[in-house]
Image: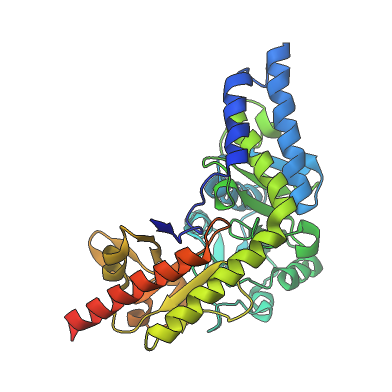
Length: 377
């Protein structure tokens, strides 16, 4: 199996796995306990908090651990919106469901939500965000990079617009950390979502950066863990793993970016040479180094993935629900016709892929495309 689905999840780095296993064996105490075993677990948590903070250039007390990206996004969106009066929220039409659905939930609660659409290249125009703002806008949330196309959004410019308007700004950086440098200060954000399993860490753990001075209302209630914002006994092994993941990302992000870009360029160039009509979805250069969303004419993406699934792991650019094929909302928001969206797949490389694997994957995909085109002719 050649794994080209790193935007869905990544293999856990061996060094990270060692840290997780060590914590499972040694740090079994409750971090809230005052005895030495509990204090040792607490120390592991605070060490990890510092590593996460160092990766994005913030203070450790501004980092809150969660169960992952979905919870981080929900805490950010619902926490800030529900901490004040009902008002207006600005987001985009290309967000992950863990952003879109909390916004829709708030709409049911009386908030108004504007979903700004993307341009044909997959980028949101900062000017459109500015135009969408109103006097009662209470929150802006725009992802750093899209999970399907890999297109990097102009978060820095949007952040400046938000600062000028005095509106809290959140970005979901699930897909960018570990792939490209991401500084909260440079991005001009007030909140930022961190997801461990997207850059070689364990699943079920994430973090949320919240700028000091910003007040959020808890969305779940319990004891005083994570300053009362995210109650529940901490998952010490996973938190320790996330800390190690961030430490390694701080050291190796540039190296990984160069490697995955080389492989992605080889992958697309080879497919373009051998598959008639193939086209890249999204901006050609302002994109994650590891991500390709490609349209393959005359081929149903679901059928293609079924043919290659035992040899190449990839993902469709569309979702199949209850037996009905539906085009990706991200691709259609970019103005891509539904038929083209249904013929699009996502290929995302990782740090451990090799050129030999890429060439073999190209061969498998090309053979499958030829077979499907023959069957449909």
